[in-house]
Length: 515
Image (cartoon, rainbow, N blue to C red):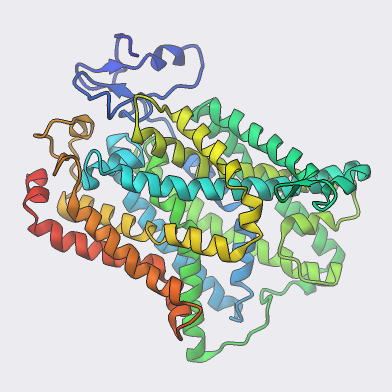
């Protein structure tokens, strides 16, 4: 439903502003899209249409990345880099190279969405076709649903610690064998559902509320991390700091493959949010603001956070007698109820932050793209939320083999999807997008291809994904494949990029859509 009102000052001529823009004046969350006359309703709603206003500053983008990094998963990932047997200077080089690659790629994928003002699944219409874009949207959406459930479960585990510390009588209800259902304890169910509802509430209020929430989450974790680090330094002394968590076991040329593996680990960790970063860059005031936010949030922030993590983790050995790489477990060892509650709640909130930005917003746009008339952004998000419960993520998390093959199989498509999108936008289309044609089913539209699908993009994605999956599937049985599996994202991305570029230049339909 739309009401014709005066469009915003930067809306295109003849635009019809969504009814949500009327609501915006009352301070309520809105989709914010400007629906022009002629946009096909089968491809359009307020959440997918080009934005009438782009208001995010470089700090908002910086805060987005802080929320993405400052989590239990980010803590463990950063700490694991310093436990690979490399010297600390080698780890720092690998870290900087890896995060610089992520920074470079994020800038590449950010530009088309920021310029056009549309989310990732819509910009995918340029390369996959107006209907074919549902292929990458569904793949990314399914991955996000699985991780959304797992991250919610991890946050609920932190909340369990707080509740048991405050109310020791609840401890028996945390035992699955005595009080459990579907593999989760009664207390675990309570914590999981509470966080599930809280996340849904933040999401339901719209992107402005989410922006404010992530503006708070990232800095809040830094405050607690510095306090935790200061406490451990006070207990152990400055001399106890050691940046080599696992000791140095690789030197000379033997360290090169390990460093390359560390670089691949960093890129793989960010591969999900990197692919659909357009969902957020579309809100940027300018591409320069997005790039500045990326620089502060990726190279600068990740380096500082990683050093802080390894210093904190190294101090757990002299203070607690063992190396602890889980921040929630670290704060649980402190002999102070207040410190435990503050620390665990902060990391729980941080996990909510990363969950919303990395795993809630993505499927919301992705599922809305499948059927814009029936599925709004909010409805898409709630589909993801319900799905995250149905997959019982605690069982996935506790069965590494299942989660490995399920998520790695889907994840093998992330590299090709990225490579295809970049090849199309920068090499085939020379950074030109006809925004109006993203929302038309007319066969004369540039992105109609063959019945709404671009077969070249589909072929490039499938071939890239299959080749990326080979080392993943054979990693445990064929010598050398386990090492190659670490580079599955790069394999898929490179193959998808090359095949699409070569076939796209020769294909008449792709050439016609560019002309």
